[in-house]
Each structure stands twice: as C-alpha cells, then as structure tokens.
Length: 304
Ligand code: GYE
Image (cartoon, rainbow, N blue to C red; front, side, top):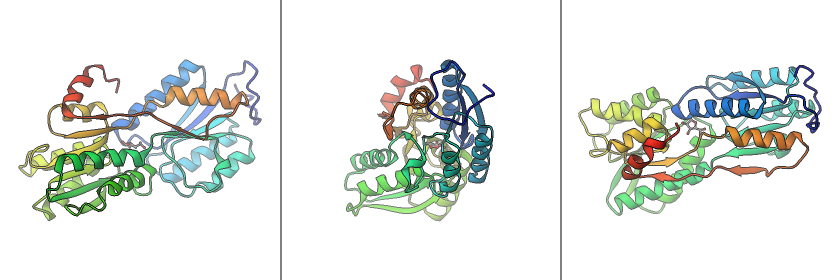
C-alpha cells in the first residue's frame, strides 16, 4: 500500500501491510537462512517487505530505520547488530506511531515500551549448553580453551560468553587461554585461530560462538598440521548445513542449535500487533543440540 498510514492497530481493512526490515548483514550461513526465512514468510503472509542489509554496521541500520519511518511503513522489524545505542531512533519510531519488533537480537534499552516484543533465542542458554558439553567431554582433565567471540557488543556474543563461563566457573581444570572476536565470519574465525595457534602450542578446545567461525578455525587447524575434532576439539553454535556437515564428518564435536527460521512467527506477530491485540514481550525460539551421530541423522532433512 502507498497510503501506508502512520496509525497502528488499524489492521482491520484489506490494505496490504508494509514491513520495513533492517537486517544485520550477510555475515554467516545463519544470517543467509534467516533472511530467506523472512522474505519467504512475508511473501506467504501477503506482507510487503522493504528489506535492507546493514553490512554489520549500526549506522547503516539506524539510517534504514529512519527511512522506514519516513516512508510510513506499518511495522518495523530489525535484528540489532549491537545491544546499545538504539533509544533515539526507537523513540522516533514510537513518536511516529510505528510499532517495532525485535527479531533475533536484543537491545539493552531500559525503556521496554520502545518495542513490542523480542522474538529470538536464549543466547545465555546456548552458551550454557556448550559449557555443559565441555564439562561432560573433558571431566576433570586440565583443558586449555580458546574462544572465538561473535561481533563485539552483540547480544549473542555477550550472552554466549556469559552462559559458557557460568557453567565452567568453579571448575579449575578449565582455562580460557585466549578469547577474541572473529565477527561471526568464516574469515574472521580463520584469522584469529591462526594467531591463537601461533601463540599457544597447547590448545585442547575451540569454543566458537557460531558455525562459520568454527569452520574458519578448522581451516587454520588443518593448515597448522593438526586434526580438527581430534587434536583440537570444537564446539560451536547455530547448526547450519555446513556446520552440521563438519560435525557429521568428525571435524566439529558438538553443536548447539540456534534457529534462524524466525520468519513465520514474525509475520504472525506483526498481524496480531496490527490488529490491536497484545503479544508476549519475549518470545523464545525452541532449540536442541547435536552430537556427531545426531548430525548424520539430521542432515538429510535439514532445511538450511
Ligand atoms: O548465531 C550468527 C550470526 O544473531 C543468532 O548472528 C544470530 C547470530 C548467529 O551471524 O551466525
């Protein structure tokens, strides 16, 4: 619709809903699957989607949101690249009467009236699941861990680190000997892992905040003449196809799932909100974990 109307909660007419979606970027297999899910679900729901890719830069996302406000879209949805610094632009959307839905990543704004809900995973829980596997796998053996962090300041990087540390705290045999960001990319994971390998002769485990960085680490480990999954074990988060394949091949040891298929739920929430009905302020995605055996079983029917 081009009349777009700044009023919310109209929803009753047969006018097409217009959504402005400000995506993080295209940094990982997860993100690609997430974008596809949103585009397909919008189409299916008959929602017109205006989509922008911020290339992992907050300033680009803010620009995109401002342009959606100007275009008077009916709803704005976005996945904030980092947690901080959103209050001003979210207030602008609120003043324009446009509801905002957070998908995938959270903001740390104290004023929770700035968005209607946050749909996405519990990243602290994911970090804990990774940590629990490590405790199970290594027991009381002395274990040198290197950590490949996601994008600095992003909710999944902060929370996956926190959950993992929480589980390992108080177990003195586990030492995180190095921890650095690889920005959630394969290339970033590879470069940081190369440096880690040069500095530390004795790494037992890589904890990568996503599959892509884990896949980059595999390349670095192989280039250093070591066997990933054996000489150095690897635990990651996401469970996208390439990650699951590496898990099935024995190069990754364990993956904590994080579902990117948020599109259908996002469109449903949008319709509910625009119809003037209330939604839960926090909607958590359901997820599992995968061992190497489970990856072999799951791979043939995996959607992404
Ligand atoms: O784990 C990572 C992506 O925000 C949950 O972002 C998402 C994370 C995902 O780049 O692969």
